[in-house]
Image 1 (spheres, helix red, strand yellow):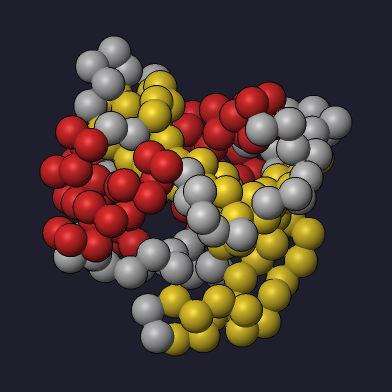
Image 2 (cartoon, rainbow, N blue to C red):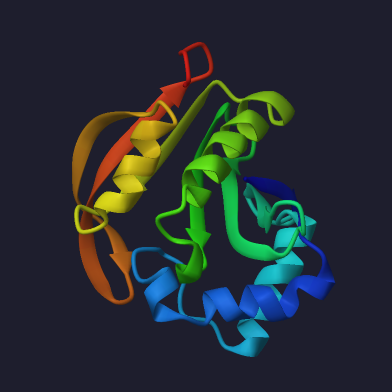
Length: 171
């Protein structure tokens, strides 16, 4: 259904079309981005945060077979760690079509395969049940509830914690 691919500078318009929309980023730490901020996000994503204490591996979610960018996803890994956090966002026109689930499953393949990680985790706000379903569909289990752990768009939010180990079966 979708194919993950590396980002390119030519993706700027599509990236900006996503990260400049509050309905797309409303549950994420990512702010609503100006054009300049979108370009900075894209450039640092292509470079995978070389000077930061973490590595951020971001992939375009490409509509198959055209490859048109319909979303973004990524894995963030503290340098030297063997676990990482996954995230994803999808164009609203593609919501409810299995795009995020397909992308998250492929992202786990990247995390466990290409990056050689042992454990993957994700957080999900209670007011975003669609994302919780995505995480459960790719085999992640709910491990707990974190109180007031994320400051999203200026407000402290609580979240569910999901995780999966490399050795655990996936659908």
